[in-house]
Image (cartoon, rainbow, N blue to C red; front, side, top):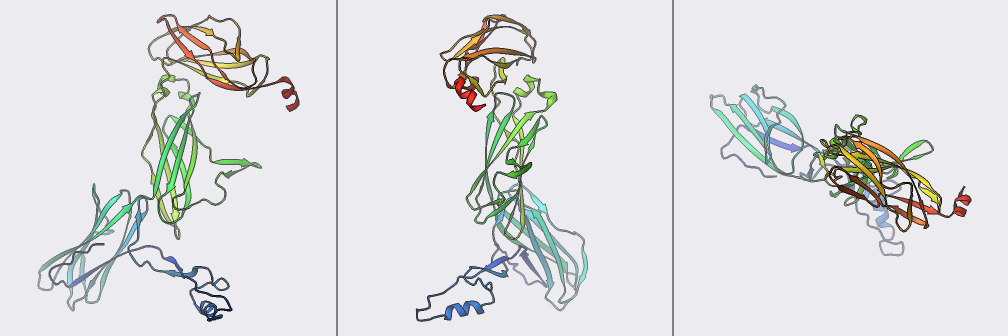
Length: 413
């Protein structure tokens, strides 16, 4: 903290103190074995020490609280509180006192004074007190500027300022990853790391979706009809620990069929993070709009709507496909071709006409296929040809299915 002292003698004194909660007193235990020279001297001293916990004198953490010994760290998202006191150290009555507190950041200057009114007079040994609060929203150097103006008994107008500099640090490191599903679903993984030196109680981590999406949190497990957190009952995040949160976003029902609109949406939403430190000091961060790379579906998009998880070897099974014209202007005339692979064989007529598909519209198809090889097999070999442009779209590895023998299927049933 940097303080600029005034050059001239003033009748008033300005004191500024940061308001923070106390911390638990820590005491380093000193002990020895009974056969050592001090005997039980150290143990008795610890038992008589009022800062230790009775019955647990060997613990470093005591029952007493200690006031902050320095300015301490301030992290982004926390609330900066300060006590400002102007005291009349002279034997004169001072008039027209005005106290102003501003916070200067790298981008703006904020007025934090609770009241800007002028105090008519201040008698000797009297003081003017004020408490300011500010939720810190920027990283870097902050300067608290406290200015005092007053008038002496002789009518002389006096003015002085003091500057208090402090740094605002980053408490969390947030990284995001996006996964585009075969449908219009988007999975967001948020990795949150505690980069402070003290543990955090993670009170809330939620995703506020954009106007075009709904969100489902995937951070709980349903057991016995009740949901429990995947992180357990202890929601503390130790220093340098990282935790992953998962969310699933879906387009709103009224937009689900508008493939052209959903295709170009890049804004997903904002993460809202609330935590507590030490003795309940609260902090909150909200990220900017999370952006994803829009997937390139091309003009025609093919999705698997339904497919069984497990099928029997060499027995036909059905899948349902959804074909969407992602173009916003052009009507397509499509032909479906089915090409067999080494393990997957299509049942039906290849090269059949699907008819015209208008812009941003979809159609559903039920197809039959079978597998001649056991194991996890990939569904491939679908081809769509647009007759108008003579352009063919190839779809391979669009889904996977587990193929088991008929005997295994019967035993599992």
